[in-house]
Image 1 (cartoon, rainbow, N blue to C red):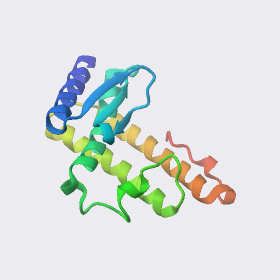
Image 2 (cartoon, helix red, strand yellow):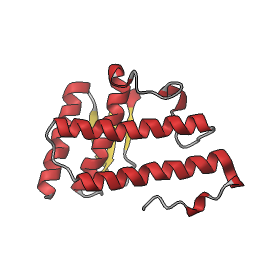
Image 3 (spheres, rainbow, N blue to C red):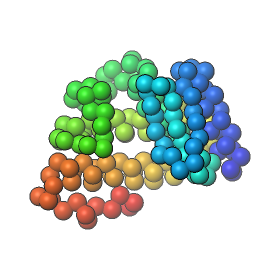
Image 4 (cartoon, rainbow, N blue to C red):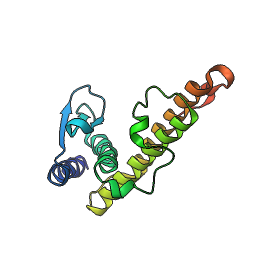
Length: 159
């Protein structure tokens, strides 16, 4: 199975480079991330190939959001994504909704791209990771917006 995920990762990496000029770099201990200003995706190479592929699928969704305006033109919530680039410092409900929208879009666009490219991936695991990540944003965002007014500690993003 690992060879299948590695092959899918390498295929998607080549596709992103060829279609968008995006460079995918693997770095030990790095946080998976998309850097649009320099057209680079960083993936933690300490992860197993299955997890690296799923991370790249997600980051490829961000690439599509940023580089294919027609893909997301009618899918935006309020404001523009560039208004809410700092997901680590959510300041309002509107900001939180936009962060959640972009993250969900990235997961869905990335998944659709992988399916269209016939890349084999663990869909069940992708759904688990998507849920965990989105719930983490929900928990973090509610805490930033409402502070101690609500108890977000009962939210477990893993389940």
